Amino acid sequence: MVSALIAQQALADMPQPANQPHPQMQGQGKDGQHKWAPPPQPVKVLPDNRVVFTLRAPQASQVEVQGGWPGGTQGDSHVALNKDKQGLWSVTVGPLASNIWNYQFIVDGVKAQAEFGRKSPATGLPKDEFAIPGDKADDFIPHGAARGSITYTSVPFMDSQKRFTVYTPPGYYSSDERYPVLYLTMGGAHDGSRDNEDSFVFTLLDNMIASHRIKPMIVVILDPDAPDGSSLGNSKFHGGGNETDPSYVTAAQTIVDNIVPFIDKSFRTEADREHRAIGGFSSPGAQGFLAGARNPQTFATIGTFSGGFPTWPGVGKQIESKLHYSHYTGPDLNRVPDMEKLGAYIPQLNADAKMKLVFMSVGSDEPLIQTFDLMKTFLDKRGVKYHAIVEPGEIHDASNIRISLRNFLPLLFK
Image (cartoon, rainbow, N blue to C red):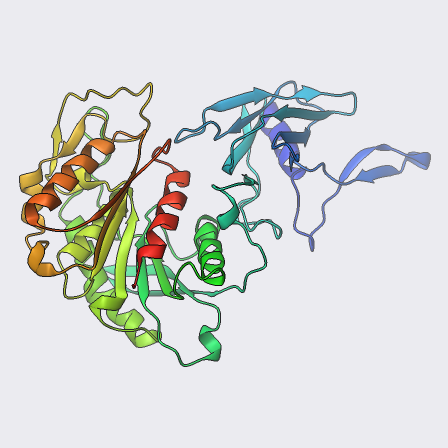
């Protein structure tokens, strides 16, 4: 209980919205009046890319910062902070490599979560993330480019409603132009309100449109999972990810049957296969791939970023991997898809489908690289041309999504 109270106090010290200031009392002044002091800046990136973490927690006995550097799906770096006489804890780490890193203060063993739902006006990032400048960060933070608009909406989806996010490019509402559409199947229980996680997508689109690296486009972001979830729980495969049931396939088709027509009626789209693309990450990304591969009359472009193909219903099979978790991070170490079973789901994906683009990417240091190689062989046998990228040093995490999306976008709608 004491630790929880201390963590609550530490949380109160985190930056508050400008219109709701909550400065902290610090000591007493004359006549017993409390002195008020603003909370310290929790993260400061120095010019040499070292990072200073600071937290006021005068009653705490131990404070750590947990961070996503140098990598890992949960963050594998814990660093102790040092306390001064005023109860201010701080530590300097790095220099860190260019990327967008997450962090979390841990006060006497209790996480003091930064405010969820708040983004920095300067970076557009959630309060528990910060950017180290360079190639892996600059495209994902605002630089003054004209901004697109965001719409949250929903449609009937199987026996429920599916909420999702629609990005329209700068100038959409001041013109009568029609635009191509990219559907992103990102997962993570996306309910149309997860703008913190999506913010890097919007910023990337703004920056790449402004620099003329991509065409202006409409982007629909959704989690294609079935309303009650299609996961059967923990996988029976050692080193495997989730398994899915038949609703996974039904939900993939519902994207085509419900969401695509709704978008075409509600927004100024170029409503033909040549101007529709679908792609995404991990198991949701493979579900989007399934939707596109089964409906080449709807989508001419499909793609996956670290596609979770072993999660398709009944497709995964056990293997003895030659890879080791000491180097490879992510799901499906000892599981790959049975390619005959996978192929039976998508007989439409062949040379006759005349796909404009089939895109696949994978991190060089994640176990799904085994599935990636099998998929390349499968597409070769089907006579399907593809664009495949192995991203050096990437694993199964948010950095992988950002880099994959940046590689995917310039290839669209040519």
